[in-house]
Length: 381
Ligand SMILES: *Cc1c(COP(=O)(O)O)cnc(C)c1O
Image 1 (tube, helix red, strand yellow):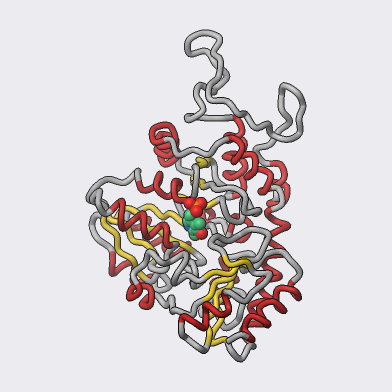
Image 2 (cartoon, rainbow, N blue to C red):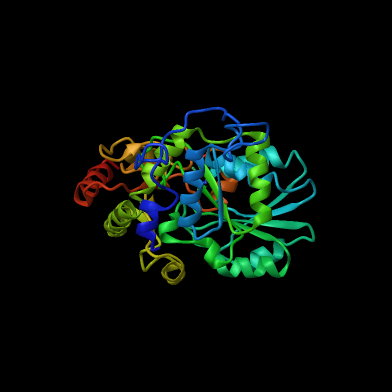
């Protein structure tokens, strides 16, 4: 099956009891057994739920993976992966990482004896320089958040596998429509399904997809043992969102390209980051690794003061000032004070996250209206 067909059909079949075309919301905590241990594959809601099973099958199909495990949030999915490691293990991660991932690594897992090194993975040599005998996992984001740097996933997988470490790719920004890390050699794909997969800013969720039976066994064990699983209603909302993923992504990409080109020519803008611009330092990699370039755009103002950014951020009328991304409606955000506030300023600046950096999640509205909104907001500086 091709992607669009999978988005609509994978994991979903008419309800055997009634023929309902939509997967029912199995709002139940437990399942009646015919005799002790004789059941239909479901025993208790923390362990498994049919609505969740449908979602997991759909997510696995979209990422060309064999298995998926759904979690209560993207952070819970990341947490479940980290729990497969042991004290004394070492992780190499991209340095301009989602703020919540950084916080989880530094404030929770360092306390439990896992070591982290954050490197600029646009330079694969940096990964080798950070390598230690106890390196077990490489944590990749591509495109990165919020600078939209790309990491050559196939190359990182090759380096890691030659040295016996696994590779996890947070594919939230690209979505399975634009990029399939398992096909590029990654061992794990992680999603915040809250974002493009849900697509309507109405649900929090996460998932891990893998081809590896050992990894999925560990992840399912975490679902059962630590219990950060999504409820059936949330799984239903995600299944519903996924059906239009490919259609929404097409429009997100078209709109983002137009917005990025508009900003690139604007006199008040210092620079724009979008993988679909020729000026992006990894434009060639973007063309090789992604089907299109996504809905996220970052830019900095020539006036680099925090106040200038705040002016723009509080002047847009269509772009709503909010954290998160990937919904049908356009959002504008300020990494320095919002999504990346957990990263110390010095470290933030070193990673290129300046005070005037603005991040857009370009929605699926009319591109002309979006550009007009940004134009009048930039007038205010
Ligand atoms: C939002 C996000 C997460 C965390 O997901 P939640 O669903 O908010 O827990 C992780 N990685 C990336 C890239 C994200 O954008």
